[in-house]
Image (cartoon, rainbow, N blue to C red; front, side):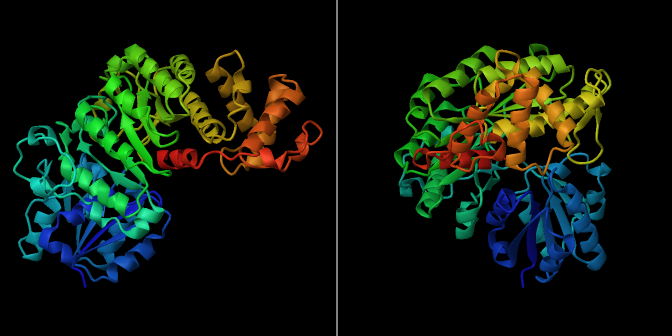
Length: 531
């Protein structure tokens, strides 16, 4: 039986726990005495406890995040009631700050704050040697990446050591990619990282606290990517906050995958939106359509708001880069906007939304501001009347310039935008919602109307949503029924459907099934990995 159980509650089964694999990779000799058990937040806590206790461990390490802190608190509470002698160790971003305010931290035996890759192994070694630290809260030293493969044995070209890693820390970590199983490769999102940290100081983001940016040594990292490719991995989700920060490294990684491209390869990167030099453009343009997805954190296009939250962003360059990506590449662009930032009112957000729509990203993720523990966004609470939910995910409820009802309208806006725009189901129909008017104002009107008529935001079938959209276009926008029907029918056929809904049968001709084309698989992959 193992002495150590590493566990967490993932948001979904498809989300493999990257952090647990790092911990396992860095346990050293203790790895043989450890096992990893993953669950998801839909699982019953008692079932997870049963599986954990079946291992008869001495130590349970729990990864805690904003999406699982509530069920994780229940898990820890019940574990300690059943087995008080069991040593529970917490780690993860949710418990790295404000530990004195959290029930889960009170319940646990130890809490490791910061990057626990090495600190967890050290703690486990002490515990198993009956050398229990007196301090409950353990602040992990900042580790760096380590070259574990001798330079002369690498099969791939590498950069020199000065380019490969930053910092002079004595501690270093092993890469975790061998701990992805064949089942993971077949059924789950494979997370990878070429760097940690972020050079920017956006006050709503935990990554702004991770300074300096540290790069994985490029040679060993690419060796690991080659191993994943050799094992059949075709979808890679890079979690680097600033993939295109270091031009030499980002070029090397793109070139590596371009040289090994086969149909079905899919790469997701988070990119700095106003940094896209010509050397990167040349490489990006060579990838097949649908092979690359760029997640672009726009967040706000209001200069005053950007300055207020310490966000440095050249909006002109951002627009130029996004338009170039759409016009000259097959990259799937997923752009983020945040509702509820200090000082951003409804009109300001709407103007930014319209500007972003004009840049033509395939997806616009409208997110509600969250007060992540440890972030300096709290300094605006009093001057801007920021009121947040006390419960995870700590979303803003109102501000001095956006009252609760306005934020509720925008929450519904976000949900309906996901269903209609981000789903990719209404590419032809969507522009008819606004015509020559403001996309934001028009879609907000549609959102209000949908909620009034449907009374809900979830559980709406595609057929019912399609009929509601047809009614809105014809009844509210006064669009001729024939024109609205043809747009909707074109989307139906584009998605591979030939069954005419009853409300369209008198307005459109039956489908020519030979002409039906489905949305590309890569596009579906992009939408899946963006979640």
